[in-house]
Length: 155
Length: 412
Image (cartoon, rainbow over all chains, first blue to last red; front, side):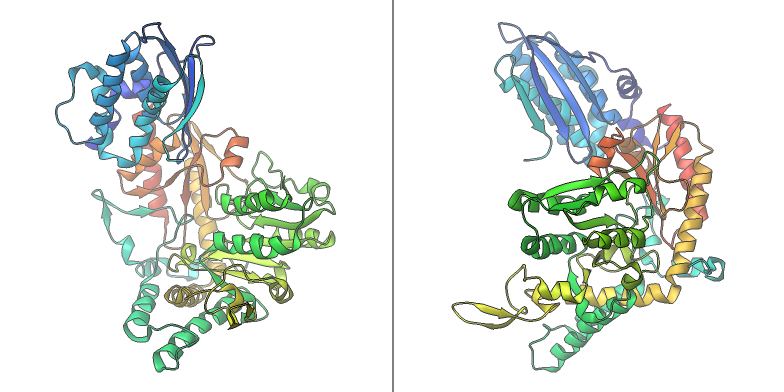
């Protein structure tokens, strides 16, 4: 078995891609961001409900795409649900550093998300891993209960 | 075409003409099954480019020196070859372009811009590549024409029973692909052109997937325009051609202005050369055209009927072997098809299949294949596609099957 592939598709990642957590919608009181990766068609609808103090009270997603994009979204929602806003922002930043740089020490706070660093060896797949996070960053910039579009490609 | 005997051709010897195929990718022998995206180049084409740059390189049509006349002869000689290759009445009916996309944009802008007005209809089909959709949408934004689509049936063929319903008198041009790049469907181009003519519409054939794969004769097909790319038929990238019936090309205005395309220029205005030169502003892709000529010589030596028979046999073998795999959906018509097959595996998304295969040296294409509207219609996130050319063989298909079995084990 090819070790790069085993690094990319770890058991945890395959498991999340097949049984995504926090899969669904938040019908009221949430920011909705539609994210897409036009070069390959991955898609996410991210719903984030912020508490009055800005914390991530609830977060859910629906969408379709490759194992990487789906697992990344699932792992992201598990990690940032319930986190204060500042901490969620830090996680987003740390995740991007994790998969787009050669940095060897990644914050422990990322937990299972660190398993996604296998994507570094597959530059064409970095966008798949980043899609959910781009949508989340956009959600952070939105006013309450608004809607937005975000893309992995510059428009 | 039916008399072709592919068994008389030494395909293994021909494969040796492609230096790129003799390499390992990620520690495995390269298996290149992405020729529908771009074909590989035989040594004779690479040599033709080298020879041109080492001995004959100069600008065409205006230098009064030896190298310029050699370059001009080679460039115009390539135009003659293209004309003969597709059965055009004369070389004046061949415009060199960057490829299929530019050819279609030329027709949309120069012909459509002059002859279409608000309310006119451009009829396409639902299986068109983006290159035969977007130029017309851009024209529609400018002029108010309407773009309509002949439906594709679930099995991947055109809804021909509805053709008369869609070919209304408002249809001024009917533009369709010869072979679908995602489904492999071979459309009955002759019949479609005849139907277009009956309602007074112009026809345009997108031959990107067919020009290097089967015999083409524009006069037999009865089309008004035909567009194709060199790089999918052993020639370099950045060169292709547009065939246009002489009266049409003559009636069309230029679309790019510049040198090479003018008769005379004053500060007030300009007069233009005749077709095809009025459509070739600026220094053309001389080396590319020469490479295309060399590719045509090469393909004709093998025989397009033989190539088609080879591709057809190989794709049939691939489909038969793929059917052994559980949880696989194969798209496209069950009958005759071009040398490509698109599929979906229950266990893995097309991108995961493609990434996985790449790690074993197998080049497949995963995604929407520039057919987003069609994929949306079929509710597909995309497909994985294996496309074949005459340098591929059964052993490579067998290896692909082994790798796809690995995919299923891994993602199960």
